[in-house]
Figure: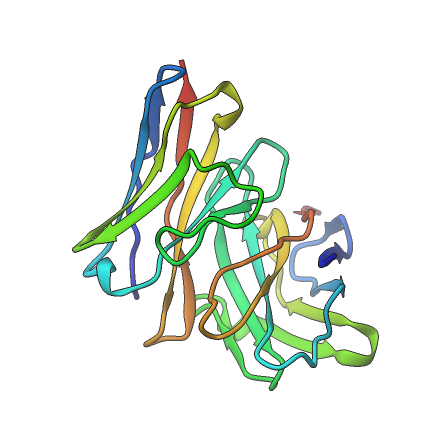
Length: 108
Length: 121
């Protein structure tokens, strides 16, 4: 089965740029989606199709995907960005959705 | 406005069968290409995809849980139902349902609020 690997945690100072990676075998050939989950809340889609933003998501959130790594980038990080972030792909060979293990973003 | 809401028991005993219902609004389960998934999250742990069902009744299940899961839909009631047999304490989790816009728009948006299910005797 397809496996997505995320770092357990990332820390960043306010106003700086946070980068959260999602590793997978040839993930660049797949569409990657990202979710933000704040404590006690359901996940919210923040990036789809590698780099598109749903309406209402700040332009500070961006994404890229190439080779074996997809990256969620959060510019000018704010305290309100502190949350868990999950990447997700669809494994077409099994028709299963796959989530990464999640990354806890801490704003220092 | 598209919304989904999960409902079901808060507490189940080991070996019992869990039945969860996802009631959707703002879209029809007969809408071409749309689907609904169930996803769970044990306390403090990561998201785990469980199953999905599409408008054409195509279904798929997590390989590790396939023998225990059944997903179905009642279009007239706007409901998607997930049953999980032989519940165990390790199945304690928040269970979410989420919409899949289409086969090619294979992300989850929006999600329901989730329902916490505890498995304990």
